[in-house]
Image 1 (cartoon, rainbow, N blue to C red):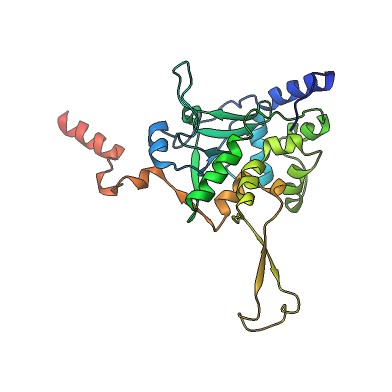
Image 2: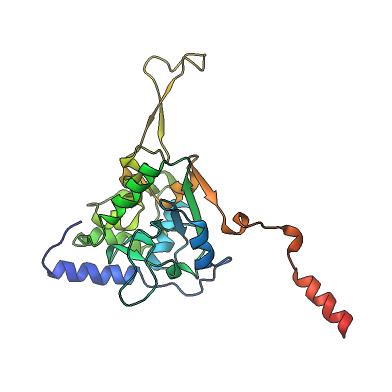
Amino acid sequence: MTQKTDTLLDRIGRWLAARLQVASSGYEPYTPSDPETLRRTLEPGDILLIEGNQRISAVIKYLTQSTWSHSALYVGDALPEPADGSERPRLIEVNLGDGCVAVPLSKYRTYNTRICRANGLSPEDRDHVVRFMIQRLGLKYDLKNITDMLRYFIPRPPVPVRWRRRMIAFGSGDPTRAICSTMIAEAYGEIRYPILPEITRAPGRASAQSSYMRREIMHIRHHSLYTPRDFDLSPYFRIVKPTLEYGFDYRQVTWGEEYKSKDSRSA
């Protein structure tokens, strides 16, 4: 990420980025997020996955075969209240056009979301992850690599499934890092927290029968290969659902059929 003078390629890159972030028509969430409930449930260091409705979101969801196309890190009250009295920004995210920015929870009130929480994170490591993201606020991406963005204008790229993740990582890196969840993965890599580690058998142990002898070495993948889906699939992140955190009782649910029966009896 760089800060550079404005050039023709910069202007073209910004125009392409704006086109990729145009909202798709017909998007309707199943369970839109309530910002207040999210705020009560989220903890600093949590990852909020978002089902985006932009043109680029559709491509990312297709390439990753996932509902989630975007991710943001929750930082709690680490950032100050805005001077203009507006809502406090509690999420840090990376956008193709804006770079690394802080946004309020209400930005995603009309989207499907999911909370992913690193299990057993120590207070020191939690603070380190939050601080890592805050220190990168304001950084902008170099959008000069036009070909790196043009591939996202193809809604369903005709590539085999095994190559799709590599297609996201392909290119110079700057537009790729703006699209993927690489900065969050990098933050967790700083504290050596696994997301989806590659498992490699220790040399000379591949044919051993004993589980003790088949010691495995976990290798954390490079952060440039991570996508929002990986936090959902990771065996080391818990899925936290706000509706279940505050005493959900299925017996208290009022179904539509009950309303109909009440109306028919009162008629």
